Length: 187
Image 1 (cartoon, rainbow, N blue to C red):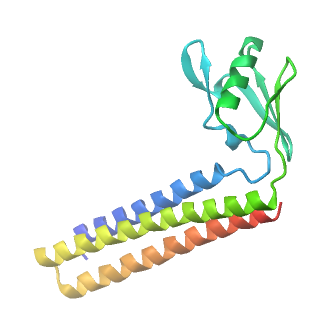
Image 2 (cartoon, rainbow, N blue to C red):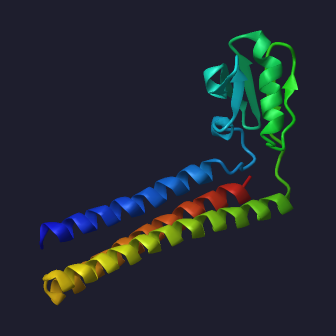
């Protein structure tokens, strides 16, 4: 096959892999009733006028399956961090004891689990849409290459390879979604 075809297949696979990486990041942010430092990765605090990630102004640790602690490097940051946690609307009330902030993760209700399962499926469907868009773009590019001079047989082979990539990444998406749903429902 020509170099153009190989580049096209490589770009398509990178695009689909990117969709999977984005899906994994989105799934990490879905709170499954367990304490995880990643729950706080998008929290920023006002550190002397600069918007700074929480992990850069404090020590965040998991005490047990349902408890996170946040110990700021400076005690003066306690109220600022607490304010940022309230503003993040995590659905968890921070408990400030003057030394550190404790976050107790409440167990999920059945209704909340079902709601999160729907959210997870929606995130998964977005990833599949992205994968299908990559396939559509690649197939359009193959048609241009066929018009540009490569043989139709090579074009058909490339389209089959693109479809097998699409199937592979769709299965990965389903596996990730299934694993997250299982985690969510087994708590």
